[in-house]
Amino acid sequence: MSMDEKIARINELYHKSQGEGLTEEEKEEQARLRREYVASVRANLRGQLDNIVIEHPDGSREKLSEKRIRK
Image 1 (tube, rainbow, N blue to C red):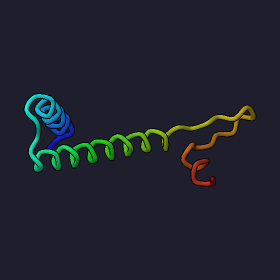
Image 2 (image 1 turned 30 degrees about the horizontal axis):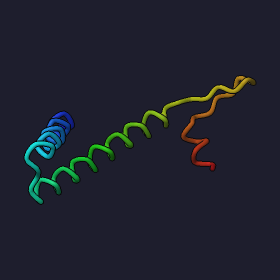
Image 3 (image 1 turned 180 degrees about the horizontal axis):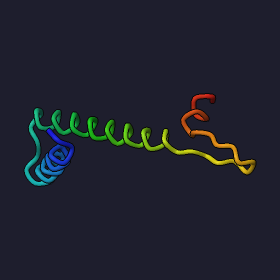
């Protein structure tokens, strides 16, 4: 299932919960899909942050990921 399909299903389950309620299986599916979505967003953000380069006033450059590892 693609991320777009997962988001559509999360939204579908949300709207159903507002109207008629969800079964236990649907609640579990909704929670699982939300966890997968959040994990994907976090992974994408980490990937973006790891590719950021900080340029210091002295002209030296440092990858943000290297700075984060040192802490």
